[in-house]
Image (cartoon, rainbow, N blue to C red; front, side, top):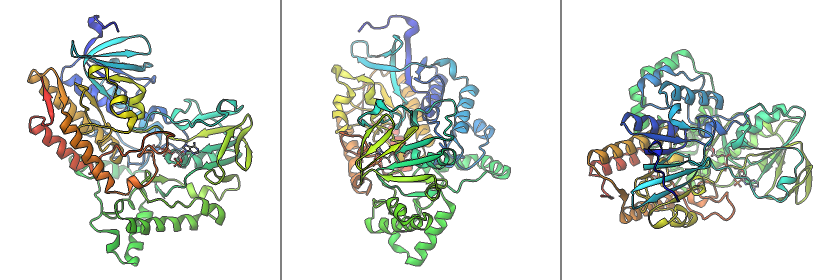
Length: 537
Ligand code: NA7
């Protein structure tokens, strides 16, 4: 490799991604006086909110918490329209933030970073892009999201289809018109469940190809009143505090009781209230839902009953009824999902019973049938947690790649989910083994960005050149994460959390399940104790 000698291409920090993480990271680094380049593959800011433009795309954290809180002024300037706004509004918010803080000039759009190589002799990261640019940086920071590497399953005949094919995570910018069309949706995760009701209203006919049925609870979305929005703004300090301290970076904690503590009548009443409030209320009603098999089954049975009540056709209702532990696949909130199967133009195909054999020029062929389609929507998710990191050739000391070190995901090893030994001066925002997707992302992102920028300030003040996680600290952290996860029901279910959605991917659970508030305290404690577990040179 020819290292960059061009002073313009010598910066203090390179940041990957211009979503929630990258934007705030840039803001903080600039405030601290570091020269920073941000690279973004898209032609605009937004990250997942730039790419996921499929019909019905919404956040599933309530909007007044689904935003930055670092700037009181920003928090008070922006008003959300509803509890769960649609993607265009969230993207508008992120553009507003980028414009308000004049971040865009430091972002290089339409540019994908292909490799980042640590050079021991110079103690710098050499970052190469797909446009042929090489930039040298002291700090290398990834803000590439946990679920941004789209998974298109390798189905026979994928390129033979004569109609239109879309992936929810790479949706076109212009409106896709399904009017009069026969549409097939493969996948019933959050993206499928959000888009299916909207597509069904427009298309002539919709066929849903479902591999695993899902629990989903009504979002019970509503438009915010002006009074509510004002009240939220008046409570800025309290909301920021709550978001920093709670288990998921939202306003609520888990309930104080075990599922088993309540009588059947009281439990039913609480779950019914949760159902009516919508969103994640049910998930947070008890303190052991995700660890207690018997308790989980009681809650799961309540939701199964609801599915049976809502869906008119008993055979379809049975196919839609899940049997895994509730909440161990990402808990989904929907608008009219199960109701959609009562429409005359919607049918459900169980592809576990009759697997997809091939995509044909005319549609989809399963083991026992062929379905003619004009359009196919792949709502087939992402190679989560490690997928986006492994797409980049990231090499640390001795030329070892991140993929090699983590044994292609079989042995993810990090310290705090922020750093990994052998990769000095590199930070991963919402990296594997941090709370990330189990928390409210903007909150988990703010915490990481603030920790990283404080750390970099500390290194600069103390004239530290090389900052690296110690192997011992890393081993202990990874073992701790695994131990916590193994004590829950999460690891007993196939999901994108465990990597089971990707054929051939090593199974693990690279997420810290000890709670976001507790995690923040651990990170703060590490910093307050002279960044214990890190080596300095
Ligand atoms: P998810 O939640 O990973 O859902 C993907 C869906 O696609 C899920 O139902 C999968 O079934 C299904 N799938 C994946 N591959 C196939 C194949 N080969 N054949 C049939 N069906 C398949 O992704 P989403 O985009 O919906 O949501 C991701 C996250 O974004 C979400 O959790 C929120 O955090 C936001 P499976 O369950 O694996 O059997």
